[in-house]
Image (cartoon, rainbow, N blue to C red; front, side):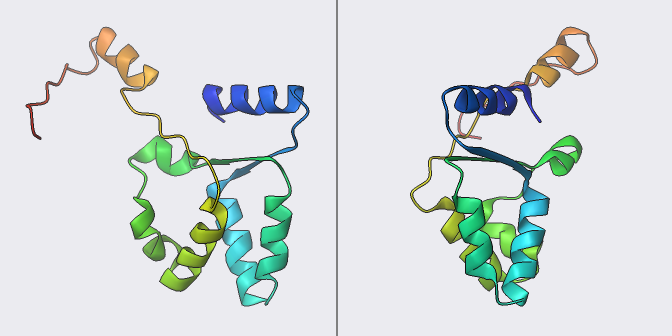
Amino acid sequence: MTRYSCSVLREAIHRGYSALFVPAAVLSAHLVQAYRQGRFEEKLSQCAKPKLLIQLVARRYERGSIRAVGEWGAVFGDSVVATAILDRLLHHRHMMTIRGESYRLKDKRRSGLLKHQTLEAGT
């Protein structure tokens, strides 16, 4: 769990909110399995109970970029299932996108392990 997600989770619990932390891969697998067993809505209801749901995409995060939401059909192996899952999970939800360079990359640049990159305007 990232420091940021851990902080958000702890603060939510401290303020009395119910919260669920689950790796995205685990949640996805459970939802796909429930869909195939005809228990999709039941499983989604369980996931929707907590006021805060934090998904972690840790394995992919450690190895490279995470696919755009539009490409998740390939991730799930079924675009209909992916669309249904994402539609229900993201409806009336607040998503946070953290932009900018990670602390890990900044530390590597400071230590000289990576060279500074400059981006040209418009690219």
